[in-house]
Amino acid sequence: MLSHHRRDGFSLVEAVLAAFMLLGAILISISVFDRTLQVEASNEKRIVAALVAESAMAEIRRMAGNIFSQIKTQYDGKTWSVAEYPEFRIRGTVSRAILAVPCTELEADYSRTAPFPDPVGRYLDRSGWKVQLDISWVDGGSQSVRIVENVVNFSPANDFSVQVLFNGNPVDETNTINVPKGDTRDFSVRARSGGQNIEDIQFTWHVRALTGFGSIKTVSRDGLYCQYENRYRNFKNEPKYAPGNCFLVVQATYQGREAEGKVMIENAN
Image (cartoon, rainbow, N blue to C red; front, side, top):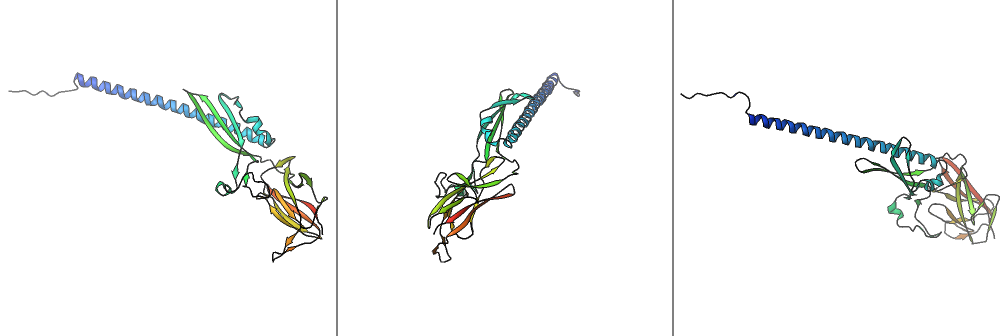
């Protein structure tokens, strides 16, 4: 008669195999955990680097409110660090921020360098700095974070003013510019606040009649330049003349403040 024996437990081979599988699972878990710690430490350093970059950018913004024109001189090509995190190196790159108004696609049809009165593209290219900060550190190899921002001057314009320029010199209502009959004169304008020129402002011109009248023949697309003519046209497009005096007026708005400049025009007969 055959007898049957029930097996209780594992064989030696099965026990060894199970031990190896358990050991493998433990090693994989340790490797994943170690990698997780490394990634977490790397992410923490990237967060710190971003905070260092923001701190450096805040420093540049503060300087823009005081001496905006010196931003490029002070920070372009400069390498430095903050005292709290000396292992993070900051490198600055500064260039002019060039922004088309209203958009690049429309302004691309115009020349950037055409002489007045030819039309030129409208670009904000003097009122902002494009600041790039690269934060680098060593963490198992060279690592870096980059931020880019257009920095502008937001200092309050408490004494905003507009000045008419004739032949590059400031003139106002106490000055009289003689314009022969049918002739033209070119004018320009500048805005100032806090003893500094305010750039990239849109200006508008008009003629304010007194005892005489003329017209604005041409204005640049940004309003910086104006050509006055001792002549105007009626509704039938016929040239007319009105000898006497009038004001050539230019206006602008900056930070909600309005200002105007004007000069007396003598329209000769």
